[in-house]
Amino acid sequence: MEQGRQDRGIVVAIDGPSGSGKSTVSRRLARELGLAYLDTGAMYRAATWWCGRSGVDLDDVPAVAEAVRAMPLTMLTDPEEPRVVCDGVDVTDAIREAGLTAVVSKVATNLEARAELKRLQREIIADAAAGTVRNSATQGSGRGIVAEGRDITTVVAPDADVRILLLADERERLARRAKERHGTADAATIAATRDEVVRRDADDSTVSTFLTAADGVVTVDSSSFGVDETFAAVLAVVTRAQEARR
Image (cartoon, rainbow, N blue to C red; front, side, top):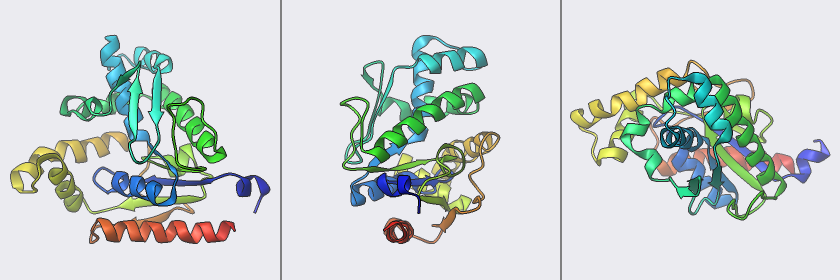
């Protein structure tokens, strides 16, 4: 194995659709292994928040891209308490509000904005792998990172040491998201959650592929798994990769 890869911390890339469990598993994995944690989806949400704060029309493609390039964004990558700070404002909770969720795909499908956010994501991943930070607000427990999103395994970090596509069938993903948002998964709450899960996946699939594993990407189907079983399956993949690096 090349010397550069041996010298850096491990990079774990996890992709998957809404409700697949990738955020829960990725953050837990980072805590378990003492790595930094990056939720790249939160960066698109932060960009959406920033455009709203700046009065930018999300349908104005060039204006959105310009706003994203100017966005003062800090990602705190400590898995114990990951935070998103934009222009000095902690927006970690604000970017999860329903109104923002309904429009975030307008930024996520803006190719110029996407290119800028991918550049930032690569910087964060490279810094974490090298065990360095660009500012005191970027934290991780050790060298290496778990990064999760839609196209981390294929576009942002195709050379990651571990690349996993975490899947679950649509019914299970809807139920999980309904429980997360509403505390129950009855017919009404699943219907209320459908747009967030199905429509967002459809929108985002126009600019990234996250339902089919690329060559070298390990698929973990969590449809019949609980959280602990899913975590165990993902940890096993990472453990095998760590052993191969030694």
